[in-house]
Length: 283
Image (cartoon, rainbow, N blue to C red):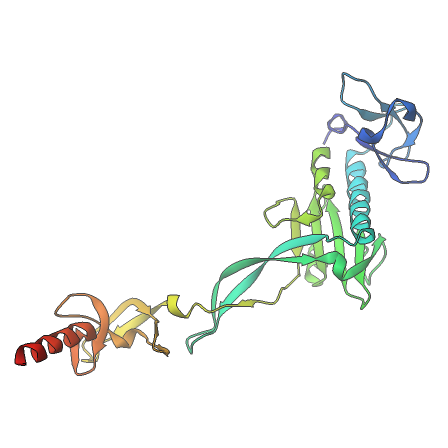
């Protein structure tokens, strides 16, 4: 990553507070501080070139350090704004959907997206405070002591031991200054590839798929002559869950349907129709 890729959109004021170059006017021409190297930055407020800060003197400023520091400060600023305004700071993540309506379950039926409002529970925010053996970039903490680690990854992603600790982690991946715009959002969508979530372990959603369930199984006809690998069907039929042993390829219609108990090679529908025609003709 070359320093030339950094336009220095942000600097620190005298009080250490974050300054966005877009918020400055011609009357704000003075010295500011670089969040990366700590040296003096001057605002460039021309009308032709894009506004930016530049170092007063040539410095060996690390782009990685600048991006990492700015990521932390921008997150803290946004999260504190949400806390003070009593507005949500939400994150989306996936949870398992499970059906356990019949004796063949429980069955995993895919994933669903859920959203959690962090400011509702996590009301304390601290920068680089030690938590056990780890020092997260930012620590969110609830009144009951629950924690979330906020990590800003520029060149170094979360270590395996931190992930394996089962601590809840939200990792922001930042490669260039344009990526810092993620920190202006108060809703982190699951589709955003700059946001990685670890160890949230949400409670599964239990939902009925009783009338849509399909499984693989072996069909054994009542005659005992067939043992064919087919797709079994489980249907919501009068409150009963039927499996593959209740189905047959009908010798009359050729369809794979529920078999008639006294006619093992014929389906129930064909037998009932045949009986109805017989009664009608008889009368």
